[in-house]
Image (cartoon, rainbow, N blue to C red; front, side, top):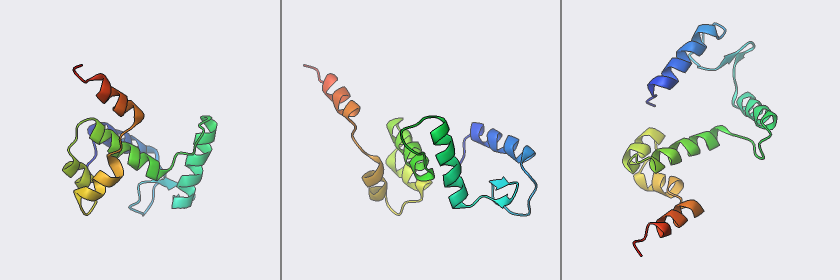
Length: 112
């Protein structure tokens, strides 16, 4: 997956301070590789600390990132490739969602 320069800098800074490991996994804790369960528990903990009404999940972060790409003008084929979807139809089905705000903006932009 391609990464932008800011994220690459953050990853490199993290790699300088993370515990050394023989694993090629990015996220390593004091007790070894982070499991999927451990990551979800951390996100739940931080979601509660931030007083969010919901728990952030890796899937939610993925969905938000791809939705933002599309809303910011990235074409559906590029998002499909980054997401690893088999077709643009799959990407369209999951990430092209009209929100109430989108609907109101469309109506507001009518030349009447």
